[in-house]
Image (tube, rainbow, N blue to C red; front, side, top):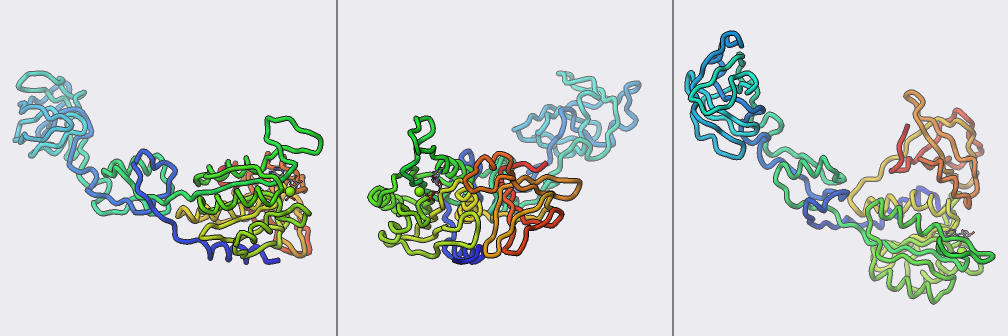
Length: 407
Ligand code: AMP
Ligand code: MG
C-alpha cells in the first residue's frame, strides 16, 4: 500500500506532454490554448473617432456655445470602413461616423449633438468647444503590437475568443482532448429507468464518470456496464486500450470473489504501477498502463469512486489537456473530522466564506456507499494520517469542486 503523495507522483510521471491541434475560432470554446495569442497590430489599429460628429482642429470652435456657435466649412464625409481621403485645414471640418479613421489635420471630434446636425450644407454650426484628442481613439492606446494576450494553458471563453477575433485569429492552436473509455462492473447493476429485481441496484457511477469526463473536457469513446465476467471485461478492454488515452473503471478491484478487474488488466499485459493506496475511502485504487493508455481502476462504492475520480482522474485529464490542476486550499473546521492512523481520510463537505475566512463542514454521512452526501457538497475535505479526530476550529485541507460556487 502506497501513500496518496506517492500515488500522485507515479501518475504524474506517466503523463506525456499533451498533443495539439488547430481548431476554428468558433469551435474553440472551452478548449485550452496551446500557442500564445499575440497582438498582430496596435489596438486601435488607426486613429479613429469614438463618436458620430465632426472632425475638427481643436482650436477652431474656440468660444463656441449654443448662444454663439462657430461656423466651420464642410469638406465631406468619412464613414466607418472607408479611407480618410480628406485633409482638414483651419476653419474646416468633415462629417465623421463612429469607428471611421481620423482625417489628416483634425485632432478632435465634436459630437453631432453639439452642432446644427448632419446635412448637405457646405457649412455647419458648432455649439461647443473641444479640447485636443477629445472623442478620438488613438492608435495603440489600448495595447501595442507584439504583446502577449493569452498564454498557453488558459481555457478559452467568450473574452479570450473575442480578443483572438479582434486580432484576426480565425483559428487557434489548442491541446487535444484525450479519449476516455469508461466502464462499470457488477452483476447487480441495472440502468436507471429499468426495473429492479431483488438484490439489484442502479448503476450510478458510470453516469457520474460520464458527467465528470465531459465537464473536464475529454471525449468519451466507450461507456458500458459490464457483468463480473472475465470475458466481457477482456472484450471491452482490448477495444478500449486501442481507442483511448485513458480508461476508468468502477468496481471489481477489491478482494471480492468476483472482483476480476485487476486480474484481467494483468492478463491483458497491463503494467501495474500500484494497487491500493493508503486512503479512505478508495483504498483498492488500481493504476496501470498499456501501450501508452493510462488505466485507473476505481472501487465501486459511489463516494469512493467519485472521490478517486476527483483526486486522481480529474487532474490527470487536466494535465492531458495542458491545464495546471488547481491547488487545494485550507479552511477552518466547524465540526470535528475523522482521522485514520494509517490512511488519508476524505469526506464530502461544504465550504463557505465567513467574513474573510473559509469554513468547512463535513457531510454527516460517513459511509462510502452514501452518495446522497454529494448533494450538499461543494468540496472534498481531507485529513492526513493521525491520531485525531481533528477538532472543530482546526484547519482542514479542502479540494473545491471545480464547478461549484463559493458563497
Ligand atoms: P465493488 O467495488 O465492485 O466491490 O463494489 C462496491 C460497492 O459499490 C457494492 O456495494 C456495489 O454494489 C457498489 N457499486 C459498484 N458499482 C457501482 C455502480 N456503478 N453504481 C453504483 N454502485 C456501485
Ligand atoms: Mg462489484
